[in-house]
Image: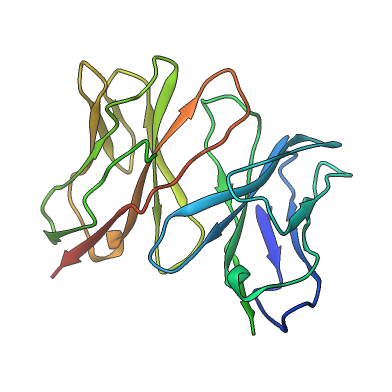
Length: 114
Length: 111
């Protein structure tokens, strides 16, 4: 049981390049979400999904796209990378949207945009 | 608007209790208080949560004031491995989970 797996662990992009950050969970969780964490700051919600085919925006969605075609996978796409998107990205999942179950986090993707 | 307020840093001697405060004066009646911690920039790890009653598990205790405007996370016997950033968050019931994490408290356990 791997939990929440994020790939790659590290990535360097040039401004304007596109890429997809992968997130997969093997716990059959309905809820998945993406956060970014900038140095010395807390986590900010980018996008989230309450089930396959359903996504919604979080606090800082601009510059990012998501889709949820399967329960297991929730990729985050950067269409045209900008230096302001240099950050650590965390994916999280939960069995449902209720309040009685916690989030399970992956170990992050460290992205640098030059 | 920050929904929770935590001190930026605290120190604690190894073996002593660590008491981490959190203010959430605008908490709604259906919001739960959740605590997570983040060690060495790994993904955050769930610790404990509660609504209005005090809670205890194998990791920590959570004390919520009667008016629910503040709470305290207690690590009863802190170890060096408890050095981490601790986040207090609020999660509403009955809606999609949208946790908001503030800057947290950097707890340093000293030998």
